[in-house]
Image (cartoon, rainbow, N blue to C red; front, side):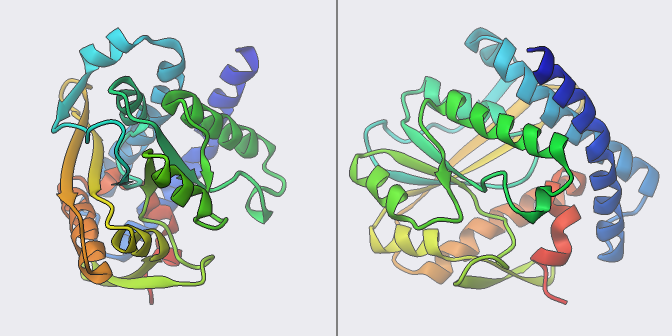
Length: 264
């Protein structure tokens, strides 16, 4: 636990630079009216996201029931589904809540390796710890997003669910989908959406946020059903992300990666 606290403490200072990059990118794209307020709120979102990682490890389900406000219901346990979410707000409690309600969900994650972590030991350790915490919260192993979709397909065949954070840059995948987001063009990975259509899998959207006036965490669960067209599915999913960013621009964690996400 002492090592865990040390990693969390030092990671907070490392992520200050990420917040500064996020501010610069959002300003360049016209999404900052008041830089001082924007960066303060962005740092607060990041701090709460890190704090929730610690709280999830040290607090009970009773704490979650007290401080998490939920809208919507999970799909019936024992049925396969694709659960889409975004790098927005603070999402750790959604995983615990899903497990508490009987879902057997695997989350697709990027493994903490590669040149991105060269010379960044603390960042790598923190990423490893967060990946492990996802598996603990869900009670199921994570799936490597950089590998094939065969493990995800096996999960569906076993009537389990797959959670995917879908607003990621597509520069490391073979097939991507163009989208319009915030008046700009971006590309996102297409494979999981295609699999959902081909397998006639129901899709749900998860949006986890922060109620800033009192600190309550929020979770919105919305079932959008089974799709027969990949383009329509992608459009509907990212319409949800656009609405979330319009509501709280500083809550989107990937402003700092927007050069990879949006096309020039």
